[in-house]
Amino acid sequence: MTKTGKRGQLAVMAVCAVVGFLLAAQLRSVKLTAAADATSAARLETLQTLYNEEVDQNRDLERQLDQVRQELAAYREEAAASGAVSETLLGELERLSIAVGLVDLEGPGVTVVMEDSAAANITGDESDYVIHDNDIMSVVNELRSAGAEAISLNGERLLATSEIRCAGAVVTVNGKRYAAPYVIMAIGDGPTLYGALTMRNGVVDVLGQWGISVRVSINDLLFLPKYGGSLEPRYAVPAQPLESEAVG
Image (cartoon, rainbow, N blue to C red; front, side, top):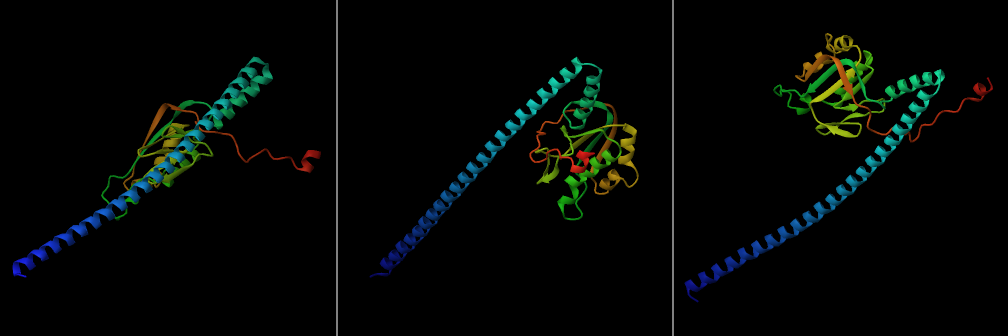
């Protein structure tokens, strides 16, 4: 065989080897893509199922809340139609409604706007310059200690059962997610609430050391919406009196 023929055979073999390699690589890529698509489809189906369950649960909670509100309105009407004793009960009912967040409220107080730090990162950790749940809780607790009668966060009424916790880059409040800026409104004595937050070495001062922006303003009139979740207890029931108390 001539040198030219051998070179031709080698060239053909080289081309076949390259083509075979490319076909194998393509086949492997197709298999991986198919597997990835199957995994994505399964994950999407799982997420859709969880979303549907969450929607159904929220609808049930809304129906329960509407029922409670209707019953409360009926109690109010019945008490208002009765005598002086019922007027006392009606006043107590109104106070309890405010305490548990079943009614919209308005009154004087303060507004607190919290935003992530815009300062240059000198620690290397981005989490040092964003607002966390404990930062918000420190403001809320200070307001409560200073006599705030009602508080909301980004329009969510805060109750004793309300959770404030980090969920990635957002904060979950009453089961809903919110991102910065966080707007806290508190009804109470405006100057007292303002002084509690802005005092030297207070919560605003401490957060400011990390460059986190906290703006506090006094307001003559604020509007706080009623609580939008369910108040139906699942485990707690009124305690039975002790035998000695019952006898007494």
